[in-house]
Amino acid sequence: MDSLNVHTLERRPDLFEGLEKVHEGSFPNYVIEGDRHNAEYWDRVLRDFPSLQFVLCDERENVQASGHALPLAWDGTVENLPSGYDGALVRGFGERRHPPNTLCALAVIVAKSHRGKGLSSRAVSAMKQLAQEHGFSRLIAPVRPNRKSLYPLTPMERYIRWRQEDGAPFDPWLRVHWKLGAQFLKVASNSMEVRGSVADWEKWTGMRFPESGEYVVPGALTPVAINREKDEGIYLDPNVWMAYRL
Image (cartoon, rainbow, N blue to C red; front, side):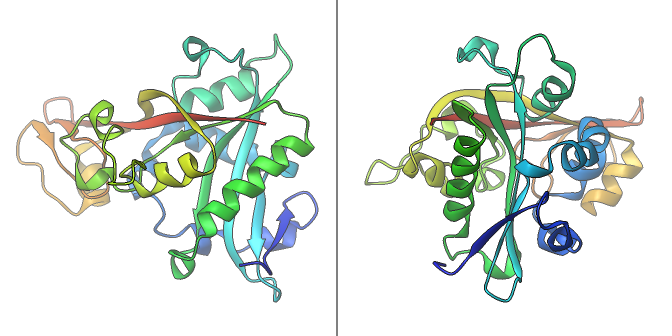
């Protein structure tokens, strides 16, 4: 891992051409396709802030992980945090009353073939360094706990209090941030809003939804609410706001 190099989209756009393969399987399809804010803003994140998007490469320039972020204004209070991932996108592109002073991490993604090697910690450290180089006073992140999908019926407020015997967070992704010095701020209950027709949800999940109600679906952190009468399924993805002082 010591031989990994950090390259930004601004300096090495060629390394981002095959990024879809790195991202493959990192998020459920419904999160990618059904979140209108993500669909509206993601390409703009890459286009407008290329110096804040980066990849980790080995000496042969094979991309092993990527990090994505955008700048926004935040006064440092819990009350003034964006609603979550979607809210960060909206604020990052819509809020212009105050100059950006905070870097907001949107995603850190490790290629499937390279997971379990400590690359997530390396990528977060690279993002912290990038934030400092750009003069930001804070780095915040709406963290999506990666083991929460195994416990979809447990409220996030309780889940984040689970601990290992050594006192570290139970969830591996929360634990990475905690070990690197991040503080828990609050739960973002409606961080991402995913909507789709019943047919969309059946395509995304490979399941059938014979009647209206709440369903546990693969990869979801909480149940999905299906309404057959309205031909709609709604999923609210909960995240956890964490912050680093730089």
